[in-house]
Amino acid sequence: MNNNIPPMFKNKYLAHALGGYEGYKYLNNEPALKAAIKNGHKYYEVDLTLTTDGHVVPSHGWTPANAERCGMPYSPEFENMTKELFLKQTVHDMPTMDTELLYSYMKKYKNFYWELDLHGLKKDAAIEITKTLIKDFHNDEELFERFLVQVNSEEMFEGVDSVYHFKYYQYLLYKGTTPEKLDEAISFCRKHDIISIALSVKDANEEYVKTIKDAGLFILAYSSDKPKTAEKLFKMGVDTICTNTLNPKQDSKTKLKNSFPLRVLRKIKRKVF
Image (cartoon, rainbow, N blue to C red; front, side, top):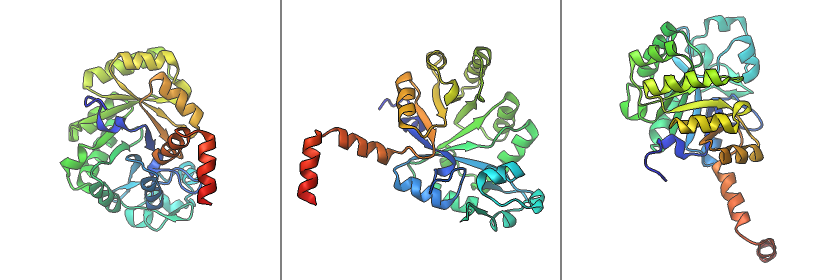
């Protein structure tokens, strides 16, 4: 592979919220991560949210809408969500995960990469969560080299970058982008050495993909669990697809199956069974 490609974009798939598991998504927990590791993933998206007592935790959040999406039974006490309270919750009847446990996985697997989704933040909130992130991840600069930090505005980028200059940033374009918004995003990325644009699968047409690639940027398409859609996106020039269910192990099985004539596979099956 080309050495000029950032390491995270050498992976076809990004495991959404640490991966889908048992038909569920938006998990951000250890069972999902373990399953994704087993399925061969080396690149993970993780949502990080700030608790009221000053910790980041792997979660999409706990507003009533987010709680429902994540399978976390909502309670009014979530208005004061501390780390201790968060760890008492379940996500689709599975335990939540703290940052210390996530950090242990990040340290163990040196060849894994991590997209950090901090969600849309104003500058002050971006500063606050980045300071906490740095602290909770033990100011580990070796690890930070394997982060792709996602931002969605100039003020969010300025907030994050004023605390710590990460090597890799990505700009998120929300669904329903326009040519004008795309041009603005590309100009912003060039100005700040941001390496990639996250583009909705619904917006990923040949024109937009070509425009982004011609600008020298990489493309993450979010999100798809359909093999045919993934194949179409890769043919367009998309580098990586955010997904709940597609995975490298599945790709390997398909490649092996397609490498033998059907009659040979049947013969092997008869011999084995």
